[in-house]
Length: 103
Image (cartoon, rainbow, N blue to C red; front, side, top):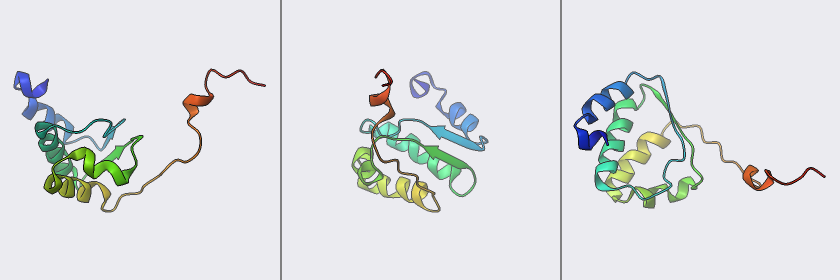
């Protein structure tokens, strides 16, 4: 929407000073060309300056293909994974257990 209404630069400027940016459910769909470029800018701007937390149901090993463009994917993932602390959850989904009666 920000790209369509011309407020993208303003949005990116507002994201820049945020100390910890949390992006929830990242990489759930393939990124379009404009989305890749926008995300690259965010990653580049924050690299080694501010913290970014990503949550995703998609394993990190599949992020490259979700980003799409191999060159941008390399750059984005380099900035996200370099010096990153990864926490990978294992086991059954909590969603599966919700709604089940306690026995």
